[in-house]
Image (cartoon, rainbow, N blue to C red; front, top):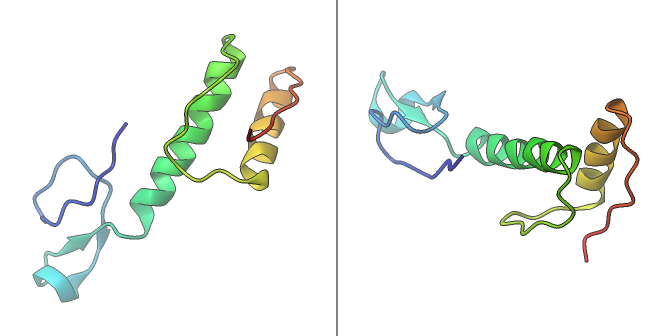
Length: 87
């Protein structure tokens, strides 16, 4: 899933939040929420990939120790125990 920075109030392919200062009263802008949603989606996709047998990934986002902890916790909920690293 790709969530880019579309500067149009009529974009159908992004997650938006109201911002009446930029485009008027019908304005929308996504600068804060879309990157969060993209990152969270990638975390959940990694959990799913590990759960179905994948063992390595190429990431296009910044991942840190708290992200690994989230992934490990989600895997443990499924009964999967993994030793993850960012190397």
